[in-house]
Structures are given as structure tokens and as C-alpha cells.
Image 1: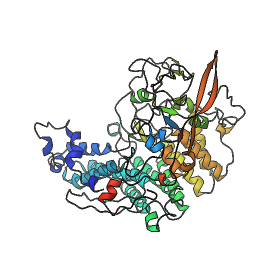
Image 2: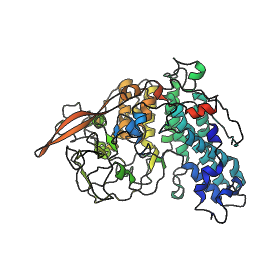
Image 3: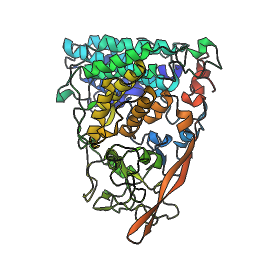
Image 4: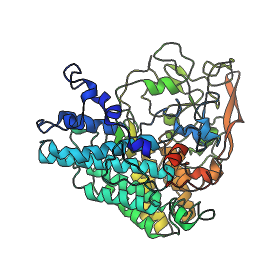
Length: 564
């Protein structure tokens, strides 16, 4: 904590301004808060750039863990390389001393400090009142978002309020309870929802904070707070005092938390602004009706080059194949009629035929057309040559998620590919989940959400109503909703956190993981399931990250999480 809150302004911010002011006119080392927040700058040019810089601390998604997707630390994917950084998370080797590849403590507290500096200084800049109000809402939202990123990793963390600490300050703040942190984030969302821009925001301000974004954060936080890990399943209750356990969740279950979560999601729905987008536009169109909030990136071809098949030769086609989807993920996709693959109509000799269309939009499998030819992940194929020292798929699959339609292309062209932080399908499924839990079973609205999600996916409506049973118990609906979340949000950093908040990680993240060994047999292929790797979850302590040991040593008032 002390290290983060004492970082000097110059070290954290000045790089963002070099394109605005000539360093020869004003040397970099002479930039100060008074220079940035200038009472003679009616356009707020540098203040706006300062605010833009705070946005850079948001989750940025793709291949961010040492080159791997976070989902490679779940049961949905394996890293294709040997001994990558993400194995610290995947194999349970994380501890409070080893650097956490997903450690968000430093970066999020730096973002919080920047937001507090902005809020403490912006009133001196003579920008129009409406602009100032929007900018303040931006900064307060970003601060709340950073607290949420910390909360889901560490539980309760120190809340610094509006304080901007100086280098000479001794900082010995205690951790706030989990409940206090949830209440703070929710209260901030309530306070700024009408200060933020109305939806939809104009194209010139796309990516800035709107009311819908604020309400979605509130819904997300309340959804997490109502979930089993925090709401009755506190892992610290049996190993710590109640005061310490309160840092990691509520001390007892309360069904009303699900009611609040359902209402918060409904508030987003009732805006009437967002809708499910066609699958063709969802990830390749920079702005569409389903995206609520995303980390904006320049046009790029990095995702297909990092994760696409390896058997192409040019600099604009040869993928690195870093992410190998598991057979467990592939098996989770139902048939085209919505039925699971346990249904007699499934043909294991032709396993990818008549499947949920989301499968081929998420995974590149053997025989699927790509860059003008069929993918060859059979043994010895172009995309699985089995040569020593080469990185290739470990499972017989490559990822296709997020990529444009390159089926018949000659190269990976540049595309608009932002990382979606919030999208409307998530709001709908959170709403369905909360209603099912609050009402001890699915309401009509739950069935409607599931129908809408599966209809958009392209699953057949008849004769099986998209494969949705006409009547489900609470437990059956719970599993159905969770399955849909898994399929919808593959590679979107949801499964990693969902399995934790549902408190099922000890089961689904402690197992062998499978691939498909495909052998060419004349004009056809044979398919053999095999163990491609494994995942380990150190239960129960891995449900939350350890507070970094460097922070514990600096601030003796910080209490470590249970088990670390």
C-alpha cells in the first residue's frame, strides 16, 4: 500500500502527455499538477489527457498473462507452450512471495491514486459545467472499477476515500471488510449514475462512461456479493476470527442479496438501450448494441497471430497457437437442436457435425475451413506437425474467438478488436441467475433470457425449444445458466472468476484435462480422447489471492488472507 500511494506523479503520468506539449518548451521533469490542471485552459487539454491515462489501468484482456489468455488457467483451455508464466496460476504454485502474474494490487491502487488526484484538482480547470460533471463521473467510476478488480481478487481492501497521500505520509490503513467495500462501490455507482453521460453516448465520446456502464458495474458487484463464495460460503470462517473472516465475505447467508442483484441487472435492462447483437458483428464491429463497455484498442491483427493455427507461412497468416481449447469445453457445446452430446443423435465418428454454431465461432477444429484451406490438426497435419521444439496445439484445437471471418481470406487483415469488459449478454445471464436464486427456482423471465441467448446463438427452436427444458428445478436451472455463461464467455475472463464465486473451483479446476487425438484414416479420420494436461486448485486458499508480502511488510496493519 505505502509503495503504491507514494509513487510520484511524474513517474506514473508524464508519458501520456508527450504528444500534447513540446518537451523542449516545458521539460518533462517540470510537469506538475498545477501545470496539468491549468486555470487558464478552457479546453482542459492536459486534464483530459490525465483522465485518458486513468483509463489505461482498466482490464485489457487478450493474452495478458505472460502471453497467455487467463482462461488457460481454467478447465476451458491449456497453454500451448511449456512452462509459461500462467502455470503459476494453473498449477497452484502461487504464493504471497512469488510475483503474481495476475497481481492487480499495484496497478489498481495507482489508478485509484490518479483518480483521486484528478478529482482533487479538476475544479480549477474552467471547462464547461456539463463536461466537468461527466469527467468527475468518469474518474469516480474508474476508481470504483479498480476497487472491484481488487475486491474479486483479495476480498476486502483498504478504502482510501478521496485522500491523496504525499510521499512523506506514513500509510498504515487497515483493510475494510468485504461488506464495507461492496457498499462503497455500490454507493459510488448510485451517486454518479445521473452525472454520467446518457446512453447511447455520441460517437465522439465512445468509450467514455455512461449511465448504463455505471449501472452495469453496480449489477456486477451485487451479483458477486450474492454468490456462494461470499454469501454464506466464506472460506475464512473455520480458520480465523470473525473480524478476519469479515474481510473475505459475509458471515452468513442472506437471500435478499440476490434480490438486490436481480433488481440492479433489471435497471440496466430497463434502460432499453442495449440488445443482443448478431454473432457476425459482436466482436469485430467496434461499436454495436450489445457492447456496454470495453477497453479500446487500435486496429490490429495480434489476436489471430498469437492464437491462430501454426501451419501457415507468411507474416500475416502464421499463428503462434498459444491457446489450446480443451475437449471439456468442446463437449460443453450442445447439438444444433440444443440437446447435450449425451443425446443419441450425437455422432462421435463425426463429432463436429450439427453442433451449436457457437462452437465453430469459438474453436478451430480439424476440417474447419480457415485462410482458404481446412484446418489440419490430425497427427502430422500442417497445424499439428509434431516436430520437436515447435509450439503447437496440445489438444487438437485452436481458438477462433474474437477473430473476423478469415475462412476464405489470404491473410489476417487489420480489425477493430476491443476487449469487452461489460456486454449485455452478461447482464441478462446475471439477471436470470439472480432471479433463480432469489425465487428458489426459475421464473418466466429466466426462461425468456435462456431462449434469447440460444436463439441468438443459432440453435434450432423446434422441436425442442432451443434444447431448454419446459420445467426445471432451481438446481437444474442453476446448472443451465452456468453452462450458458461458460459457452458465451469463453476467453472473456469470466470462467476464471465465475468458478470461484460459485465456489466450484475446487472441483472443476482440480482434474485432468482432455484433447482429441485425430488420425487420418484414408479419406476419413478417427477420433480418440486423451489426457492433454491437468489443472490444480489449492483449496480453499486459492479462492482469493494472497496480499503481496511486500505490502504486508510495509504496512503491519494489513491482515493476510486465510491460508496464505
